Structures are given as structure tokens and as C-alpha cells.
Image 1 (tube, rainbow, N blue to C red):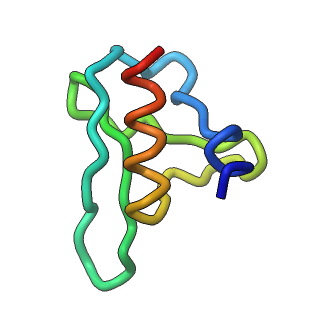
Image 2 (image 1 turned 135 degrees about the horizontal axis):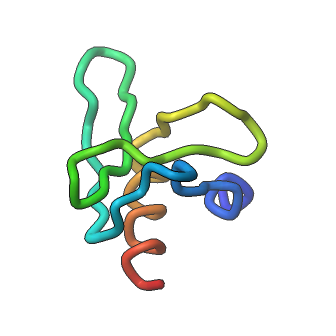
Length: 69
């Protein structure tokens, strides 16, 4: 899981800054995103271009990490 945490990046050119919040995207899949202050899901991953969702634990960890930076 730490590898994915280290690979999480903010969407280039679209990130309005924090505070960041992990949010459930709804549905049965358990997908979560990390939203910036403009209510935009800015979560992306270096290892998987186009991926914009994570599970709850990872999304919360990413939001916490970004808010601490």
C-alpha cells in the first residue's frame, strides 16, 4: 500500500490546492477520490495514467499526506 501512496500525485494543471478531502464516490465499487478546495478530484497515479480512484484507506492516507505538506 505504501508504494501506491508514494505514487499518488495531484492532477497536473488542475489542482487548486488544499485542504484535501477523501470522499466516497458512491456506488457498489468502494471507489474514493481526493478532492481539492474547488471540489475537483485531483487524485492521479504515476504508475497508472488515467487512474483517478482508490480504496477508502488509500484515499484518506493521500489526503492526510497532502494536507501535511
